[in-house]
Length: 314
Image 1 (cartoon, rainbow, N blue to C red):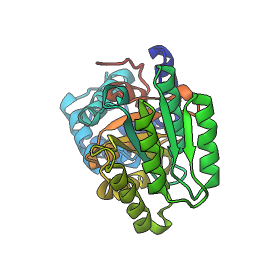
Image 2 (image 1 turned 30 degrees about the vertical axis):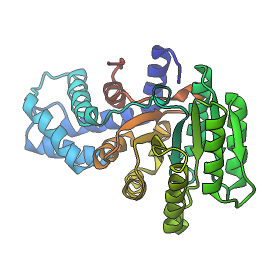
Image 3 (image 1 turned 30 degrees about the horizontal axis):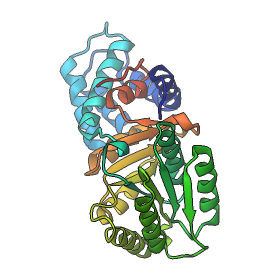
Image 4 (image 1 turned 180 degrees about the vertical axis):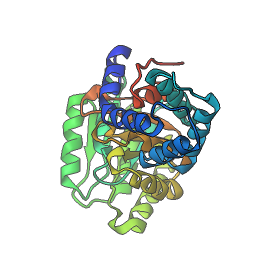
C-alpha cells in the first residue's frame, strides 16, 4: 500500500470509471437542463437508489441538491461538485484507519468474509505492504478446508517474503490459530495475519469456528485479535450489505475492506454498507495489483465516484 499518491488516485479514478460514467449519465438525464423542480428531484433520488446508494442516503443527497437551487445555467461540473460533496458527507463519519504497526506486538489481524470476496488476496497485499515497511510478518492459513486457498496464500507469502504456517487438510482451525500466535509471540513477529474459512453453506458452523479461534487466541493474548477485518466484494451489489450483517452481527468486526470496486458499475454500494455497519471502512481495492489496495479516503472516493479529479485529504 506504499504508493505514490498520484498513482493511486489515477487508479482509483480508473477503477471507479464504470460507476462514475453511469452515475453522471444518469444524473444528467435525471436533471436535464431545466431548473430543479420536484419532478427532477424525484428522478434524481430514484437514480441514486438504483445506483445502490440506498434510500436513506439518496434522500439526503437529493435534499442537498434541492438546497442548491440550480438554475438553467448550472454546468455539469457544478452538479458533480455538489454530488461529490453530498456523497463525501455520507461517508466521512465512516472513514477509519488500519494501522497494525502502531499497536502491540504481535499485532493480530483476523480476516473474515465469504469465499470469493477477495479475502485471501487482500491478506496477501497487506502482508506485502507490511514487509515492504520492514515488518516481520507471519501468515496463518486457517481456511483448512480449501486446499486452493492455502496454496494461494502460500504463494502470496512468498511474494511478500512473509513466513507462513498451515495445517493438514481439515485440521482444526482454532488449534492452528493458537499455534500461530504462540509462534508469533515466541519469535518476535510484528504482525500475525490469520485467514479464515468463508463457507456460508453452514453459517452457524462457520460462526462457531470463528468464535472458537478468537477464544483460544485470547488464552495467549486477552486482546487478540486486535483487528477483525471483514472483506466484501463490491460486484455483488447490495448482497455485500447482507454479508456485512451476517459477520457484523456475529463477530466483533473492527473494519471493512471493500474489494473489486473496479469490477462494478455500482460502486455506490459502499455508502449503505458504511451506514449500516458499526465498523468503519478502512481499505478499498480497485484492481488485482499489489498497489491496488489502499486506505479509504472518503473525499477522494466521492470525487472519483462522480468523475471528478480527486486529491487526498488529511
